[in-house]
Image (cartoon, rainbow, N blue to C red; front, side, top):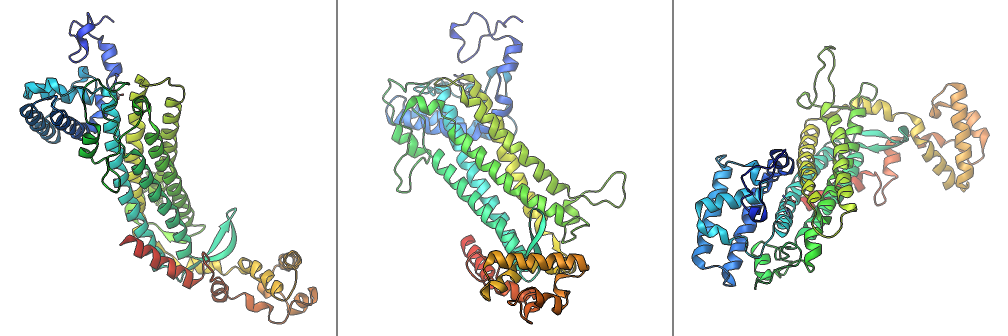
Length: 468
Ligand code: ARG
């Protein structure tokens, strides 16, 4: 398909014809990068102020540009803005719209390239995204801590290999998730730190011959350290080629997604008739079009499913950057959809998970009957023998023999006849059955990180104080 007569408005000078309609459609990014509009305007506003500060444009031109950009933002926010595919991307759409309002717009792109411009926009976007996600993570943590607190006294079997292992409180189980999400929060804070460095002034690849002030623009955009000192990139080639912050953000989302998926999987199991430990709220479940009785945990299944998508986004970014020669290559335009998608899906999953868990109710009777399984305390019986001086390996063996005996006699472990039990080893005394007391078992686990009630209460207190 031949090119059009209409030359490209910003870079068309050296071309005899415009891009073919096929190429224009293929190369546009405005359909998705318009998401960056407010950051692009923020960046351009700071850039115009810097240009005036160093005398590259007049103060009148600066004021006209700054006001014009504010008016463009108003149009965009009011839905009045007409996005044009033939202008390729968000940057050129905004610059073009500005030029209709103010002639000084023609001076805005002085000492700047779309390469450092888009890198700046994305760092502003990622800073904002990290702040938003951190707030959603904190809200989810608050729900989990409340849930733990409300169910401190309910015990459930803890599982390894999805086989009943040892008793824990629901609170201890939910606080395990809190630990994961607190690490996620920290990870997003680190991504914020990493991207909080200004690339503006790197130009297309080699900076600019014009007397720009990189510190000024960095400060203007809030790219500063804890002491307020401006932070800006130190190599213009790296600055326009670097997508590490995107990958780190996508990784933080993917890992947070994995954590959410593990919670979701537990909830799907717990909500099943087979477990019956928890009841998910109607508002976060759906029915079947065919089977009238069904109440499906779709919210949790979608969280689990979307976590795969978050991993896919991370992988796309890795694959995209891997073989690129320095510096900017147009491949990098494809870096935005995965980042935007990770942001949106992570935010959505965090909100849905928090809301669904807020409305969930434990079923204490079902938990009590599952946790009454005496096999859950087989390890405690081995510990009982250790306290009587039996080496652990031997104690393990003795209890194993008792478990086999219980299986053979079709009796619960704690209902084996004394005569048979005591005959097995002299270390087994008439008090052996006292081990099978859940309260005692939990109370015996009061060292740091264990499920003892005092430990758990301490941890709840800790998380509540962190939230303030
Ligand atoms: N839309 C482009 C992107 O997102 C902006 C940078 C374009 N730079 C260029 N040299 N064509 O990557």
